[in-house]
View 1: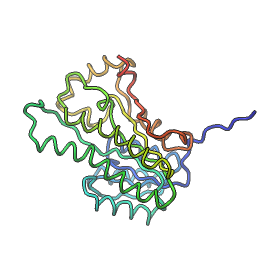
View 2 (view 1 turned 120 degrees about the horizontal axis):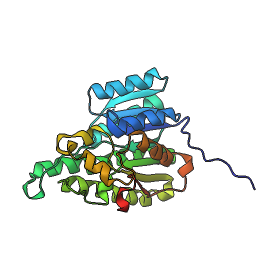
View 3 (view 1 turned 180 degrees about the horizontal axis):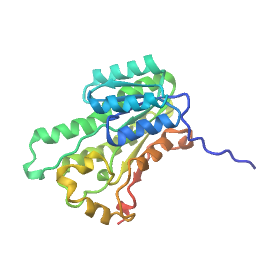
View 4 (view 1 turned 90 degrees about the vertical axis):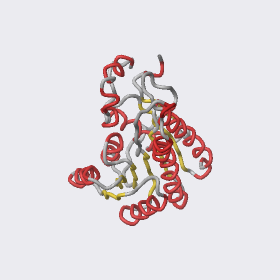
Length: 257
């Protein structure tokens, strides 16, 4: 009996990445491009979005940058339209846009709660909705949502009930969409990173806790962004063709303790 090596390449496909201007989203956009896909980088307008596009274009990748707000369905619809007009039919997407902040639950203003939930949960739903509509027209695709291990645990020392609740929602949203679209050839999976060396984890309110994060992680350190990219590309690729509804924890073993 012969076996065929898994195909992790994304050649000839078009991908859309939200939150592409920084952090995990930026790394994923570059990693997807390195795996052969054309990439549309979606984020709020700013120098970060311009910089990631410049890096992609300089490496010879077909790429565009589309300023968009993930809380605005019309903005996302236009981003998908532009992606398909300029790069081709959308068959891959990674939803990485997110924000974080901290406050004690008993003191948290409603506006602070609502903003995090709007971006981190509703924004993922609206992104999946716009992407899914396109993929349904084309006969299928693959979506990866960036959740967090905070969707499975309550982080010691971090006062972020809103963030934790939103990320738990992303995990179950992912499973729900995976089941709803399973018979229409759209796979939907989630990556749940542990502590990762991104701008979000160098926020003032967590900067003093980085050494604790590392000490409490069995592998003894935070993840690099590149270590989140590999699992994401895997879930997008044909190597993961039988994976849907998965919440893949990439946490250095943190949730084992």
